[in-house]
Image (cartoon, rainbow, N blue to C red; front, side):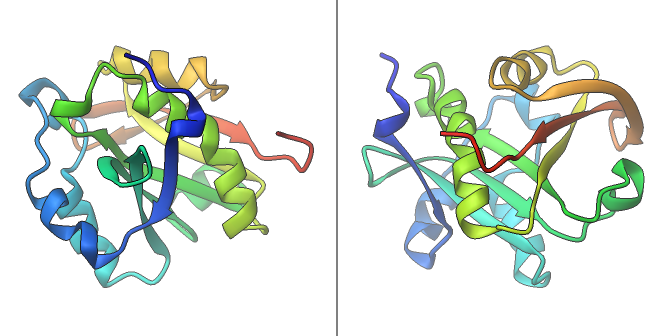
Amino acid sequence: MNLSKQQISLSFYDEKYLEALERFELPENQAEFTALPSEALDMSVNDPDRYPVVILAGGTTLAGFFVLHRNSDFVPLVGNPRALVLRALSVDFKHQGKGYAKAAMLQLPLFVREHFPEADEIVLAVNHRNYAAQKLYSKVGFEDRGLTKMGPKGLQHIYHYRVTLMED
């Protein structure tokens, strides 16, 4: 069953989601490429420029997680101080295959415009072997412009999404 983007919502992390995040599971082939939410959350606690975001299904069920990061180490790489970095996107294993990640990414530009009006671009790094993630990001409008960097698990492609005021 695929949910429309209206049935998925994005919300900043709140402690009421902690228990669900701690039970979050990823298959080994996905955990290789992204941090578990609990790990990403730990990094966010001590960094005021990292904003943890939950993906909610039906308004209440925690289905996924990611972090938006301002002033990150990507700024010199992409040459845009207004870029916001998307990190650690994942959907809990029991909620995969329902279109939640795609629906969340389709809502991301509006969420960014609303909460980070200074941001004009969303960037992310995806491992060159993570074909599923590359396909997802391309489907929702991210562009691979040929920029790469080395990551902890090998070569990473940098994907870009231009945030404009005209999007719906």
